[in-house]
Structures are given as structure tokens and as C-alpha cells.
Image 1: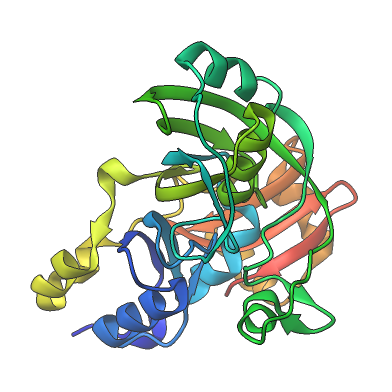
Image 2: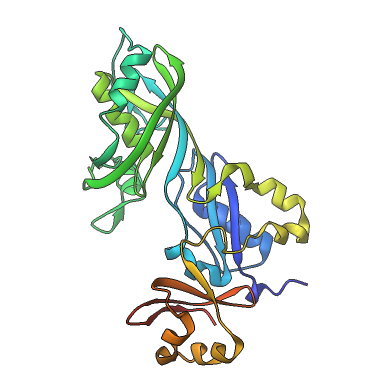
Amino acid sequence: MVDHDRLSGFLNLVKPVGMTSHDAVARVRKLSGCRAVGHAGTLDPEALGVLPLAFGGYTKLLPWTKLTPKTYQGRMVLGTSTTSGDAQGATSARSGPPWPTGDDVARASMWLTGDRIQIPPRVSALKQNGRRLYDLARQGLSVWPDARVIQIESIRVLTGGADRWQFETTVGSGTYIRALVRDWGMILGHSAHLEDLVRTQVGSFSIASAWSLSHLESLGSQWINALETFYPHLDLVAVEVEEPWVTLIAHGRRDILSEVVGNTQGTIALTANHAIIAIVSGPPWRFEKVLL
């Protein structure tokens, strides 16, 4: 029988189209019986793709988990801009032929790569003066959020022609693909919106090894075998701790950390019996998180 209070691990989930990230977490909580479930990297309701989840004590490991870069595949439609930047929004602007060539689309994408300033979409979960932008949009209020610095590692045109172009992009945190498509269209001299989107990679979590909700639910209690350990996903050096030190670490004894970690420096995961017991950093050594 599963002890839900001691359940820990990562779950590589595929969020389906038409479901919010919050609703996906609720489905997993119901399936697992575990209340402590958190997600990393919110995905728009109409997007499909990788949504990493953390269970139990692993929710405390998310700040040190490999969650970048992120890779997406999407379809850009030229000729129509929408209020939300995707196919769900109301039409806000139009353009028409002549349509760009493949070379035109590829050349325009080069202006978007690197460190860039991006203005997020007016319809999003971002807050402005304490209120969600999508709530303001429902009330007919048009509010532009503050610009932010983003990183776009690459954009590759996969296929397409005329007013529809399939692409793949790898980006850093905080990047809105809807806004990227909006700006891409502007460079091409066209209105544009994102028709569909699939997130194929989040750091070390790949869609190739991800689980769908329907598959997990079909497994019954055996869904627990889908949980993964921290080893492939934690962006830290791990140091195994001998048993005599474990109790002292649980009591926050910083004075013994230099002896425990030896010559290793930086931020380190201390492990015992294949489980993380603490995150420490130094020198000078201090506890970032104690999980015992």
C-alpha cells in the first residue's frame, strides 16, 4: 500500500489540449491520493506538451531542477492577429497577400534570436496591479504588461507555405511563444497568430518519455512506477553522506558541512540511501534546504 505522506518523485506528464496546468495537477492529485503535487512551467490551456510535476518532498527541489531550455513546435498563421495571440482570441487585425517565401520567413526569424525584450500577450496569467490579465481582458480592459528580457536560443522553420508555417524554437524561461509569433509576423509585415503549440522539452524532461493522463489512470495503483528519481533532473553535484552525519544534518549542524562535502564547492545535494536529505552551498557552508 502506498504511503501518500511519504510519496516523493518527479512525474513527466503530457498535458492535453483544453486543460489548464492547474486542472492537470488536480487530476493527478485525485489519481495519486497525494496532496503535495506541484508543477513547473505553466502551459497554456490550448497547448499540448511536457508539464513536469513534483511529488512530496520533491516540490522543494524545483528551484534546482533542470527546467531550461524549453523546446516548442508550433504553427504560425499569417493574415490574422488576435487579442490573445492564439486561435482562441478575437480577430484584432488582418493582412493579405503577397505571402512571404520560406527564405523570407527564415531570415525574419534571425532578428528574434538571442537576448531580446519581449512584451507578453495581453491575455495571460500574469498579474497587473494584483489582477490576472485574462480577468481584465474578460471585462473588456486592454492592458499591456511590462516588457521582460527573454532568451531565444534558436528558431527553425520546419515546413509550410503561403500563410501557414510550422516551426521549432528553443527558448529560456518566461518566453511567450504567442508573443514570439506576433513579433515574427510584424517583421514579415503581416498580422500573425499562433494556431497550435506542442512543448516537446523542458530541461531534462522530454515528451518522448512522458506519460498521458489517460495512460496513468489506466494503470491503477501501478501509476507509481511512472515516478522518477532526482538523478537525471537535478542540476547539482550529489554527495553521499555517511550515516553518522545524517542526524547532525537533520539538526542543522553547519559546522560539520565542510567535512561532509570535502573539496567540493558550490551548491550541493547531500544524499543518503538514494534520497536527498539537504541542499547546501558554500564555502562558507550554509543550508539552502533540509528535507529530512
